[in-house]
Image (tube, rainbow, N blue to C red; front, side, top):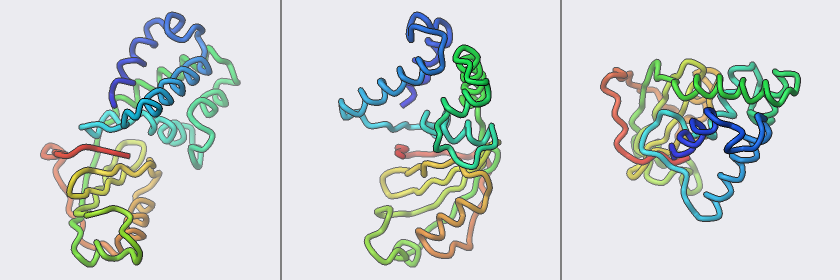
Length: 196
């Protein structure tokens, strides 16, 4: 859902009007409330485009930018660590990083078509029903993995730091995948809904 980007763009202009204080914690609390409201109202978080990424990936992006091994502590805590726990500087740093995050571009792209052997690899019930392709998308700060099913694209919740990590995950799900095809970014079209 890209509405969150519209909301953040408004907050950036006049933080005190929307979140009360010029504070990264106030913003974080506001966004958590917004997310909870979507959840309580059963509004699914999906999008029709890959970029800008779903906002959840901002945790992963902050981890990549600051050299954290993982995003467990969350973007707020990582930014506060970098700004000596100054709430105002933290909010300013958030919006600088947010603008970079919003303007991410695809650097390279490749995909693999899954055959019946891949679709039946997982011994129990398949992790992804009716998988047809696996997509690897390289962005400047890392890699994304998408599983394409007959109905949608499932965006795996990680911004991988290197190319091998998403390839390993794909092989855990579908077995050995040896035939990857590179695609010209200019011809890249995603024609189904994205979910994560």
